Amino acid sequence: MVEWIISDGLTDFREAEAWMETRALHIAAGEASECIWLVEHPPIYTAGTSAKPKDLAEPTRFPVYDTRRGGQYTYHGPGQRVVYVMLDVGRRGRDVRRFVQQLEAWVIATLDTFNVKGQIREGRVGVWVERPDRPLGPDGHVAEDKIAAIGIRLRKWVSFHGISINVDPDLNHFSGIVPCGISQHGVTSLVDLGLPVTMASVDVALRAQFEDVFDST
Image: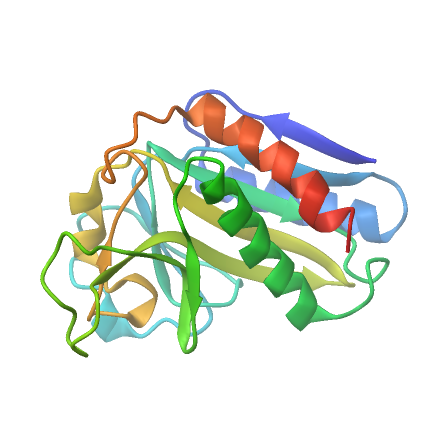
């Protein structure tokens, strides 16, 4: 069984990081169940293992935390659903690539609940949506914005960190970094797309689609 936890209010990042690392160790030891933890953080920037200093445009704007997850710079803040995923990838097949694909599929299925078509792009981490209402992108194609980020770490084959979905964050807060090292595209949210979606409704969709994606594969 997977335990689901939803935390109200804003959760301190370092406290969350310590908690999920401890939980991951207990899962690996067979002392705790797998866990999905849904949180919001105060405005912060986090740096993954591939973060480049030049991509931190405003280092004093919000607290900046180095992390051991994969990826580059990411923003977290109110209005963004952060989903910490503590799953036993060893028991689930020991296939990290497949696991990341499942996380992507989970986000896409969740967005589809709200009639938003999320897409994966080669060479660009995360989940993207087309913006035909905006000028063409730098490659001459339909403009695209990022709506969800993915960054995980494994320890003893148990995952932690996870995904984040922009429900209704202050999108201006992303301007202090180059999100995930990609400067040619923008960032959006469900509310920015014109959808009056609540955090609670996203949580319901996440749980329903989790079962479909992970229990059927």
